[in-house]
Image 1 (cartoon, one colour):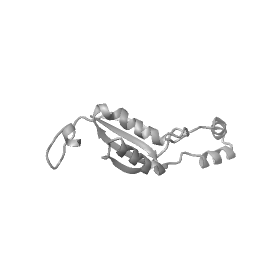
Image 2 (tube, helix red, strand yellow):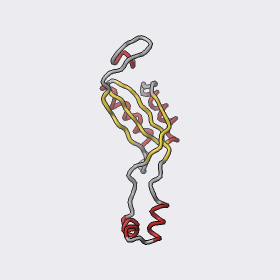
Image 3 (cartoon, one colour):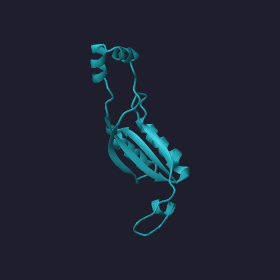
Length: 125
């Protein structure tokens, strides 16, 4: 069993939700998060800031790392379903531009359905 974590743009939530439902994955958790990627670094500004140039320091402050709102979706799926989930998320989120998102896949050691006590795959199916 795996946990698929997708971080996407806020405005892509509804189309991603629909794509997952159509792919057979209607159960997921979503939450609002903030974060940022690596971004481009203007080395000239960095060098100017190191030399204490006021213009560079001001620009570095203005262009500093901003945290952007995103949605984080998590799904618990059988190992063999991971490629299908990834394909659904990528298909509707890939624009070819920066900030299209990230997908992480991590193992799930165990799962327990609180109501029944079922464990493992039975707890998430």
